[in-house]
Image (cartoon, rainbow, N blue to C red; front, top):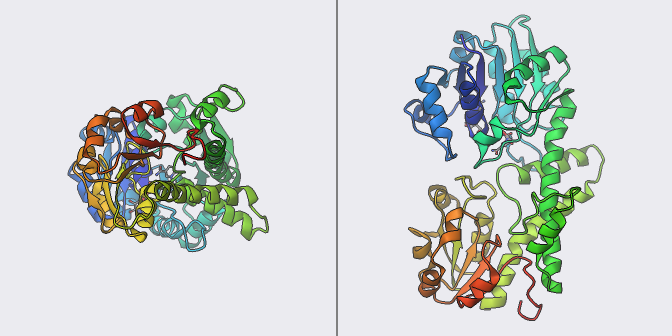
Length: 439
Ligand SMILES: NC(=O)c1ccc[n+]([C@@H]2O[C@H](COP(=O)([O-])OP(=O)(O)OC[C@H]3O[C@@H](n4cnc5c(N)ncnc54)[C@H](O)[C@@H]3O)[C@@H](O)[C@H]2O)c1
């Protein structure tokens, strides 16, 4: 007998399962990916997420966490009270959220469901999906086994997922059955976070509106950065000055290469798609997406300004993951920038502390370096793509000595412009206040 079954053992599902087990629940995690479950069953992590391995090990050893590929075993044998759906909802062909994994999961659950279940949807899904899942379960279940559907969108961030799960800003629960939402709330009580109980569709919208707002802040500051560059202001200091205003705050005002990853790009697109098919023109969301796309192109333009033609130039990408502390390359700026450079005939080198195995597959032709210094060797320019902490402590004089030309384009505004210039770099940041003539 288990308390919780988590369906989908990816970044969200594995963290959810491991953390619920750590809170004292008996949890079974289910995935259709046999390789993933086999690795987890032998103590290997299928993803890089700081602190996760320890939490998983501790709870497997305590007998509170197990893994399976069988819906029969997960539901019939373990008889969980709650079932969390945490499968992927990738981008579909027209920008919509592709719900095929949610549909497959709902059908599989319904086919083996033999006792009342509270089905909690953690995946990011379009408004109305909770009703649709209830309909699928109704159509596929045996007899009239009772169930309720609750929406519980997840807000954790890769790279700090354990901490985000255990110390959330808020828990959102939506259901047409308030008692079901309140039962799920009990699971979270020990976290002492604000809990918002609302209806299904509102909960689903809170997730999209939150991600779209954060993406909007990133595109906003990137637009300001582009204007700063023309006018000779420094966007880093502009953001600091803005952030002290309590109505604005400091978060999500880092100019750079734009947002990436497995959530913001697809979620903004999916929200715009939802709006469009319901007759609304999502003007702001479209601008947010356009500005984001431009960030990648601006890198190429800046390199052209400094190097002229990019044909046969060697460009090093320092950092490949979409952000530090993860191995996730989904929609990472590095992938698009590498392809744009390769299209111009440049030779692309790359280095990342953890994301290299995946990079080899996503960026054919990239030359992977052993470390940041190996990356620098023979480069005509380096682009800082991911702001890993270790890059902040490099021996930059050594980096410069190894390069063919000392051109450093700091896509994350990690380094101090004056210091870089005094080291002899031709340093450019994003929106860092260089006179137009120099750019
Ligand atoms: N990654 C994040 O930072 C994050 C944060 C908040 C919300 N989300 C949302 O959470 C959801 C999951 O994201 P993720 O990044 O964990 O995805 P992921 O791709 O890492 O994991 C999804 C897992 O679901 C499994 N799966 C697919 N179909 C299945 C099925 N029918 N039965 C059982 N398992 C199945 C896959 O094999 C995979 O292991 C998405 O909707 C995403 O938008 C993600």
